[in-house]
Image 1 (cartoon, helix red, strand yellow):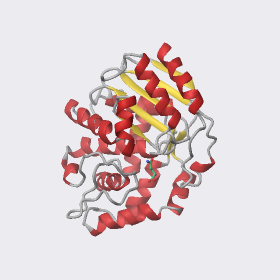
Image 2 (tube, rainbow, N blue to C red):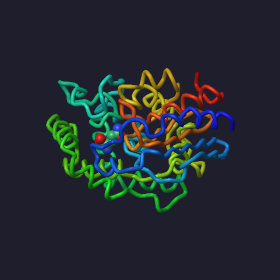
Image 3 (cartoon, protein in one colour):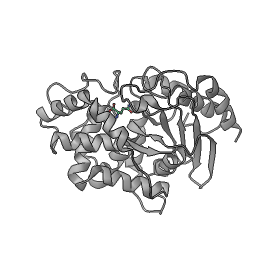
Image 4 (cartoon, rainbow, N blue to C red):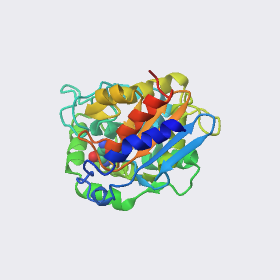
Amino acid sequence: MDALLRAQEAAAPEVGRGRLAEYIPSLGAVDPRQFGMVIASCDGQVHVLGDADVRFSVQSISKVFTLALVVAAEGEDIWDRVSREPSGNPFNSFLQLDQEEGRPRNPFINAGALVVTDRLHSLTGNAYGALRDLMRRESRNADVDSDPAVARSELEVGHRTTALAHLLASYGNLECPVDQVINQYVAQCALSMTCRELALAGLFLARDGVLSDATRLLSARQTKRINAVMLTCGTYDSAGEFAYRVGLPAKSGVGGGILAVIPDRGVACVWSPALGPSGSSAAGLAALDAFTTYSDWTVF
Ligand code: GLN
């Protein structure tokens, strides 16, 4: 695919530029010179580039899947507890809780993701287990799992996440005990997957909610809505710049991965660990910018 080669060319000067997510010590130890990209189409084709089969920490990309599982289980009640407005603030901001009700501004900032994980844990008794099962099934890899060293590393420095969880609890916006919610949250963020596995796992977002076995996880309307929230909130305080350059619903993580959805066409997953200022992969952004410029895989 020609556009994939253009993406590789555009990404090359950015690979290794930027900062690793050093605030989570084990993510700060990753080799920043890696780059992988996968395009998976709804009709089953998979195109790969570079380090497409190296596992990395999916981090906040997991938040799309926990949200999908909650919506799949009980419809859209979660929006009573979390808003869906873009935030001009960083992903770990304290400023994004509605002062009256303690309602996080969207489900992808950390505060919102804690509420979603809390709800999934209430619904299933094992939020991380539900997420891992979905990822294993859709990626067709039964050994997909959380990296305990990454989870431990995040827990050891997780004062801000702990504080956010307590703040949410003080508003009555957590149902489960704070320590359980935090443990589930760091386990989900520490999921270790390759670009190929993540792309396959995310394909239902391009297929109106239909999973790999042709059963439905989400309705077409629910899928459209989750994609819309990804477009406006999936890359935090750079969602405007990301939409301007790439123009796709996407979710980034501080492990350097970005999952982007091209409805009815397929998904793109790119990974390179060095991050730009807003916590999304710098090379990943350049690659997706070129990919949507030189292919017709775009919503615009
Ligand atoms: N686990 C990370 C955190 O809570 C996730 C952040 C991210 O990927 N944007 O800080």
